[in-house]
Length: 73
Image 1 (cartoon, rainbow, N blue to C red):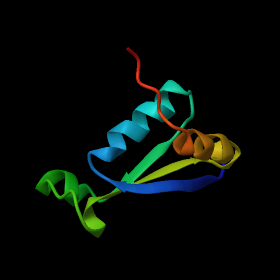
Image 2 (cartoon, rainbow, N blue to C red; image 1 turned 120 degrees about the horizontal axis):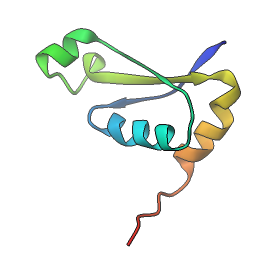
Image 3 (tube, rainbow, N blue to C red; image 1 turned 90 degrees about the horizontal axis):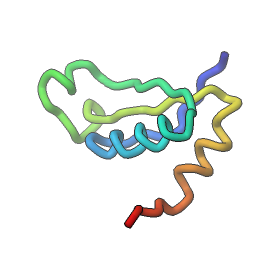
């Protein structure tokens, strides 16, 4: 399985994207610097979180991220 980078964001925004992908059943991996987690770094290159998805899910995942989010009442 070939994994591709879907997007790169900073914490805590990654939690929103993680929730969207999980609720849509799209498999993903997170790539980040471990030192950022230990030191609490959330900005700059060390604070980046990369989302990787299988190549066959890339189009649907991108569409999901580009679509407006509807909030429940």
